[in-house]
Amino acid sequence: DAGVIQSPRHEVTEMGQEVTLRCKPISGHNSLFWYRQTMMRGLELLIYFNNNVPIDDSGMPEDRFSAKMPNASFSTLKIQPSEPRDSAVYFCASSFQRGLTGELFFGEGSRLTVL
Amino acid sequence: QQQVKQSPQSLIVQKGGIPIINCAYENTAFDYFPWYQQFPGKGPALLIAIRPDVSEKKEGRFTISFNKSAKQFSLHIMDSQPGDSATYFCAASEYSNSGYALNFGKGTSLLVTP
Image (cartoon, rainbow over all chains, first blue to last red; front, side):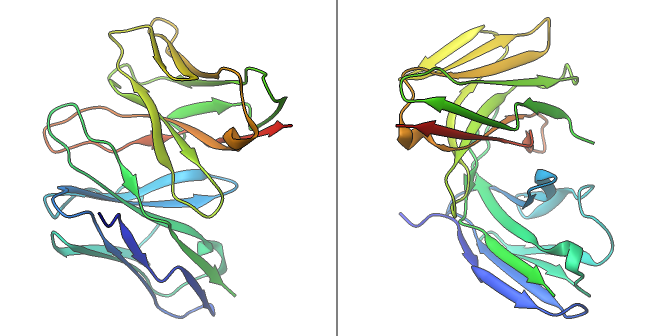
């Protein structure tokens, strides 16, 4: 079975450019998460969706960040304009949450470098 | 702010040793406490998880100890092997009808030497 698929795996861009990260969750999963990983701050939750609806976006750093989930099989995280401090590994994860259960399955991440 | 505090930041043990990683939380509504393991270049993967109605859970060489009154939990790796060298994250979440997200600790980088 295919796991969570993220693209691109690596992105190098210049400050001020728009960056779009993409995620295909595991088929049948009803929840999707975007996390950011840095050495200083570890794994930070940016936003999560349940049944394609954004539930909590309090972790989104600022208005430059936006995320969408137009359907159950696709999500995007957009940064516009990008800044050097956005450099990090961005992970998408999905899960099937029912009651008190729901293991998160992570993609391999998108490493973003903003020059 | 960090809802789950994890220590130590890094750990080096010899093969066969028992590394212990500790986590603490404040939110008493948390009801699910997993540990994730991450190898370089990969996403984290679930290792073992516990709910607050038990004080200990073992899966193979991995054990979670949970102290509800102290709001602390820890991961023990018995007979550690070089292949266990990875970054370990503790996490916690609170269930809600609209789903729940994991709050992760900052991670512990473990190196097991031969």
